[in-house]
Image (tube, rainbow, N blue to C red; front, side, top):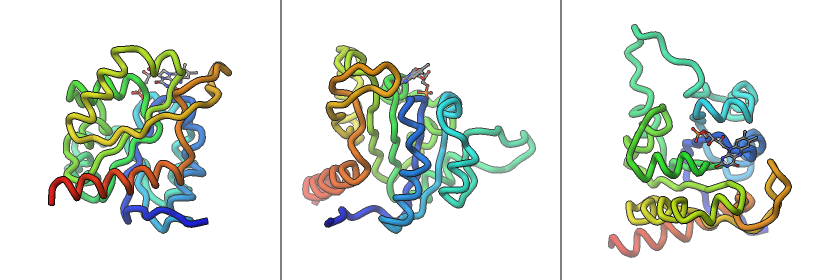
Length: 192
Ligand SMILES: Cc1cc2nc3c(=O)[nH]c(=O)nc-3n(C[C@H](O)[C@H](O)[C@H](O)COP(=O)(O)O)c2cc1C
């Protein structure tokens, strides 16, 4: 199989969708199949769907967003990870995360990293098909596109949480990276 290219340093943002349960194997694939270095930032809600320790082991790096730094720490994690990354990929991205990002709010480390990122930011929405079709969710996705953020189109699938079927599922990782590569080429052509 011909694999798409993958940026070298991937900052993976994980939000509170049931499909976050897939992220440990996706992190491993990013490293072993695509040769990427991966760091992971979780939202507080994501920790209910995926074990931070599994992500730490699979990524080989400290997982951020789980435990607050001591107030005496000089760490500025959102700036540090954002400037480290060649790609900030939010997989999966909840409806709530899309809304917050469209509004430019940063109540957590991942939101702050999105605002601090100079690298491309791509989100992979994952939700029930009724949620995805809601006008407000579509408006938020349009706003993100208008702001230069890549929005990977969800595919038809069966929702893990409720068994309903429709458009709202995340594509397989290889398809996500293929989409990111095509989107990046288009961006570069426009800015050249
Ligand atoms: C079992 C369960 C599954 C959920 N799955 C999704 C989902 O797939 N997509 C989504 O947008 N929200 C989903 N939610 C709702 C989010 O967890 C909720 O909006 C949360 O506040 C998102 O937080 P975050 O965006 O900060 O990670 C789910 C909630 C529950 C209880």
